[in-house]
Length: 266
Image (tube, rainbow, N blue to C red):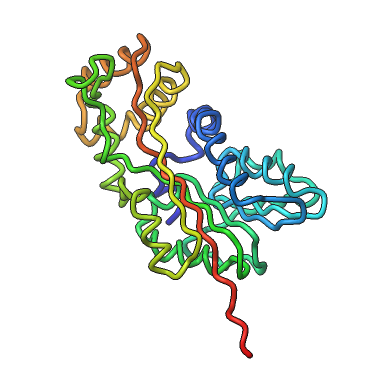
């Protein structure tokens, strides 16, 4: 997969704003995962698809001074500001690039695997990069099991443009309920201490509406070109998001699992 194949290209003028909002909304959930597994000074961490870099920075603060963090992305344009001792930034393709020549105490990816057609093979690659006893933390959306329903709550609205974004993602090979499957996949691969927690955000927090608006705006030309939504529908939806309402974001599944220690032989 190349950067050009990714629906939400980091090169887009809107991308930085969208990634920053994503971090504001979801970073506390990710931090709770790291707290639960006990990320500590001296750990070696790999942040895959590091995006805006906030998680890599948080991990670096947690594992310093002896620990190390590797932050990788297909397009690391937002990561250059992070480079410092023990925090390495690298352009890397997790699908086909060589695995880092290092074993990690924790490997983390958020909202990455659902976009990759070879997501299960990439999951295997990340497991292979772990030390025995190391932790894998995967966070991904289930955007299908829970959708807005105005009949249950009039403050929710089902936007045609959001449905069109889901159609666009499917056409690009995304699996929109992948987050729901991660725990089972890891258990089937012999991982231990598998724990999954789903978080759904239903709120009138303006940041959620802004995130949803930027998501639509970043791909608006593609949505219109493919006829997935009319210009009138799209403008109406963006106006609705400006007015404020209860935004229901997809369920974010946070899954932690541990690579088993080798069995000692007597």
